Length: 499
Image 1 (cartoon, rainbow, N blue to C red):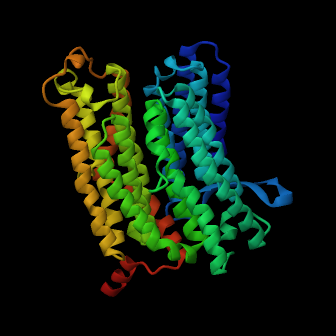
Image 2: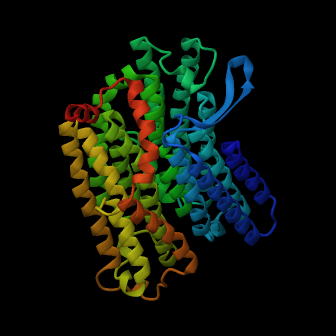
Image 3: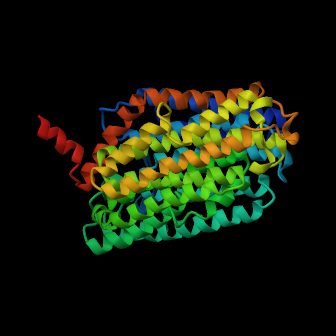
């Protein structure tokens, strides 16, 4: 079964069909149906994946531009699989949550929901691509639907946020394109296929220049400090559903690219850059958390928390240990669910009150207890409370980093304390205290909204107590990556000494 092509095809054909539907309600229902089909097919594909089998599975390779060695090459390893699964789960949740998002937009309702399905096809493609040129095509093509979703359906400053998002991403993409072409020419393999290019560049200086081309593009996409300034504007102005996919999935392409391409294609350059990247990651952790504390806008606050979380992910990747890399890959998934839940609940809150400012709320818990309870669980997952899924990820990242870089790990751990401040203070100001006059008539979550939030809260709790299924899929791929980088893993050395 060409699973990956089927997933992309169903999403793309669904988008085309929705675009021509005349009835807005039918367009929403069709989008939800298509996204649910893709989710079910993805789960079936995931069940058939063998963690102990070949690294890349569900392989499809066809000539695309033979004269330049470009292939339509797709496959998944454990890390790519869990990120595709994350995308497939979040899209139907976002569709259901976005039932009214397009009503105030300049474009039609069916265009908005069609863009959601186009974006889903692109997200699956970018994680599945094993041809680097194809990866670049998906990497850039994702910008188009997200640009229109922000620019046409976002807040008052949507045009500014959309253009800023696009320009930053295009600049990073341009650097990556130059590096991709140089990699093809210098490697002399006559192909862009990733497995065949591992180990092809041996000259240290060449590795460094190519590494920078890829890394800067991924650092902007992630976003890693100091390449982060586009994210707060984009996330704050985007509709809540689009913000979920932007921060929950699209930004993961950056950290995924670091783990997949930077480390394995340019191992020596990655080791050379590690001290700087670790430093940037630690700064991002602390900076994002401190700035989040001072935010007055709920969505901007959540965006800055994500900058802090992406610092953890990047730190785990460049620690180049089994625990660190596995923790980072798991963090990408758990962050998607936790931050997705936060953005969606914040969106429901803003939809009711008509304001994103924290000062306009107070005492919501008394009039909407279910909304407040869901907001509390999502918030506590954002501060990595034990028993909720991000805790396991953050613990593995800090453990894996401490094994080789003790001081950065200790400094990074302060992000946990700062997270408690910004999450609990936000919750206290919005949900506790006297009930503000403007929220006295606020309604609680309706059935549709509970169906949106319920699955995410359930996943946060289940994966907090039982992350083993995801780790079993992730660990073999991460082990292969560490092996290709030729790094002695401290955890493996300790295990051998104990035998």
